[in-house]
Length: 212
Image (tube, rainbow, N blue to C red; front, top):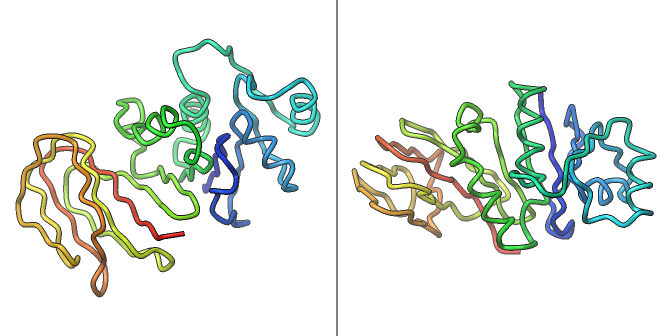
């Protein structure tokens, strides 16, 4: 199942929304942005503290299922939406948009979702995307990375210490290198075919990007 989660970040940063998602879940103000583009979410989640009364009425009257949460809580609305999504659809492939282009604290919370133990079983199912970037998470092991045709650059962002990192079939290769602290190995590029990545411990965010 392909599921789209839409957070409340600036919609000017959204990628194009394809019509092949099985479910669309709006998060807080993301619901309003969807409705004003003629897209009705299947589910709305959030505390809705970013909406005024008229905007709340617009969302609550058009979305068939709304799950509200307290404004003061331990999770961000995006974290809560991801939890609820995997509770309901544990095998869903989730694309999260609207997670960038706004407040820096929310951006970091969204990028660090992959570090949370509760999301570890679903790491391979999570993609964060905007107009110029796509983020996927990989844990230790051997991985093949396929190039997204519209993207140019390839980065390996070590979110934790990473041991024995090897990169093959990329412009800047590595052979069994350790990184003792979080490090962004930016501005790499694919050569021909797929990139190959292996490491023994740690967590990496793989980012494909382009200039926009």
